[in-house]
Length: 63
Length: 238
Length: 221
Image (tube, rainbow over all chains, first blue to last red; front, top):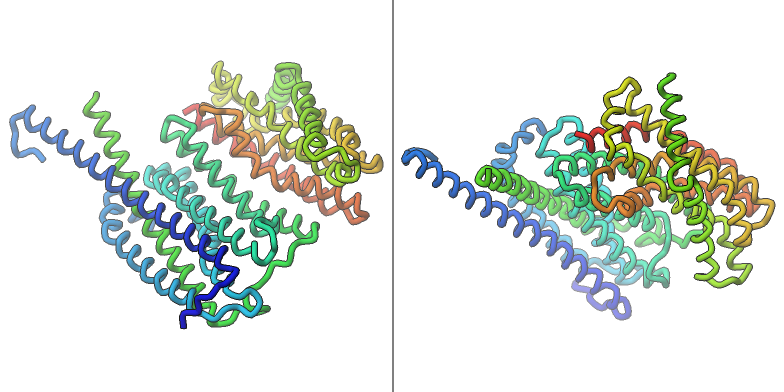
């Protein structure tokens, strides 16, 4: 079933699929990595803020 | 539906499960599509190169679809002045540009064995190239303005101007193409597409769309967190 | 309406006055056209084949030149703020600016276009149509360019940014303008192309000011 004998067309087929894989791969990786990075950053700053609030007021019941 | 999602918190709740789910659907569709891509019989005219149709046409279709989404997000951003709409626009553009780039590259590689040159200025490829330039312009404008809100607004205006111009550009390029004897634009499998080709094409097209949907949600989430982080940093400093 | 005419006169005076008026754009036009034979070789047949189209290309590029300063001076000295709040609607101000751009920049370029085209080898019988298509096309170029100029207000890299934004949008007028000349040269009907060019110009003049005003308000906010 796998009719994989492109012959002379191979020089065009493989780069086309390779580039598609690369660009789509970049899209996925870049999106996921930047989402993770900013989530961590926001959470880090959130923790800093709540620690600062807690230590200011001495109130451990704050978020 | 958009009203419900317009609330950032609700969007985050929704996308937390929706983005991975749609992503998995995309992966499955593309996997099956790729399997079919390599197992369908070769075209009697084009031989094995027809397999490139299954990564070129979906990419070209997404190039236009993403721009429509960009226009939609821009319209929402301008009319409702919603920060989530601005984020959606900013998130959409690189994905759209990526698909457009793929459409151009795969189009060139698909055409080379057939047309004998690496590039042909036919109507479709020229329109896609202009579309690519519109994406670049959008991203360049956003990058060139320091104030984020202003940048998003200016880029939204540009996106809408581009959206209105797109049919005009397409029309003018088509018109131009008939004026100058065009290279024959080949059709896979002759006058009608064999049913065997419809399945991989449809699966890849929907798979690409699902991929875009999932990644778009991921990128908007990223934008929401980035803005949250920025405002927290400002609070801490001030 | 009185306010509009005042605006138009002011814009034309500004456009004509700044930096030698259209001279800069004209020189750029001629200089760009000069590079063409240097780039492709002076063979008359080859040049003549691309003469009208190249003239149109150089025209489009030359139209970009004075766009950066279309809004900039008013933006920087605060006049744009006043205009935005004044009795004349900002859209009308934008329309006046676009019109002035066409009259003071586009019209001289349209006069130069046949000269340049003939110098590149176009036939003399094409001259009237080259002038007309450049003049009509200039309307679309001015207003489309004006949108780019307004969007780039307050940005870094003004001039090049405007070009990047606006050149893809120039595709239709370039296609129709050059296409009309090619059609005439080839003995075909040139009316549809010219009509489409005029339609594009009128649409740009009608809708452009709204985009320009929105962009200005955004930059001023």
